[in-house]
Length: 298
Ligand code: GLU
Image (tube, rainbow, N blue to C red; front, side, top):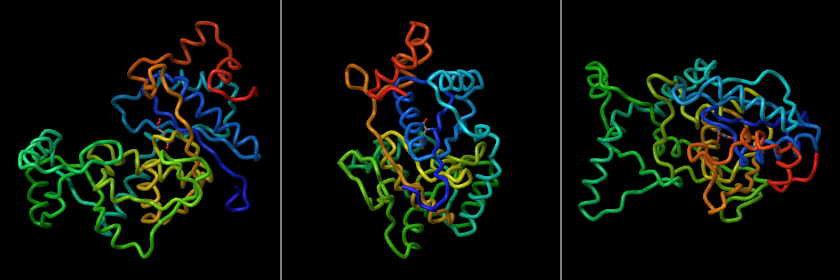
């Protein structure tokens, strides 16, 4: 679908924190095929805001694997770690609107608070990825309390005040889905950002979280079509909300099947699932990979 009557723009956005596996190959090839089919451009984005886990060696290996698969990308890949200023500016804008607040609780403090709550027999809410929602306490602090905590050097992250952000909206938000969600959702999908609670948007050392960076980069790169795994379907609700708050128009989304391991697990870099590099070393060809992930020959 061509939303602006301009050339469609697709992107593949790997994180260089390990080697690409068959799941990435499927996502990249499907993306590329879809772009080719409608005469779109195809961009690469290196999602390396997690500077501790990402490195240039993995990045070089990824680019080599993608080229080997037969993928040709337009322009120089955009490396997120080179654009922290863009993310900081967006965070500043949200801060002016009082939509973000400093969140001081460390992981262990959060765990303790949640454990205490559970002892009382309560069920702590979790986000769609299964992570516990961020507790309320920091959102309720007065400006003076916040200043004092910052002045004594207490570390903090920046989180979205979800209730406030939703209160400011005039209408529900929707996105156009050409793939399917976990429950078969397709077509016009209504967002549900509330289920994510006060998502983290930035840290002190890195002024961006995945959610913030992905939304800003999709807008700055002029992406019209986001093709990615179904594991990111629910995150689209947060992305749709951030687009609205930052004044960006949404791309069309296509969430695709995940390639699973033999025991039906999601493939992962950390579980050292068969990487493209090892498949190549074992003599697999790009055509073999297309066949393995169920795509027609190039
Ligand atoms: N960097 C993300 C990943 O490697 C992809 C993000 C996206 O496509 O929105 O899973």
